[in-house]
Length: 68
Image (cartoon, rainbow, N blue to C red; front, side):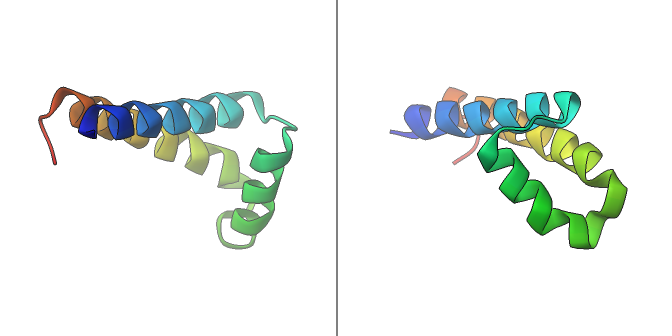
């Protein structure tokens, strides 16, 4: 079961990373950006790039059984 959640977590991280790099107009990403822009300002896309990278790493580690 941890493998499934690790892959899902890595997929969400990949979505955040790619959306942050391309500054996507996808509805879900726009909603996330709208909420985060109050705190992060113009650095909101860089924030989602960093969060996406961390989620990918944690997801891969969870899928491999290294953590959790």
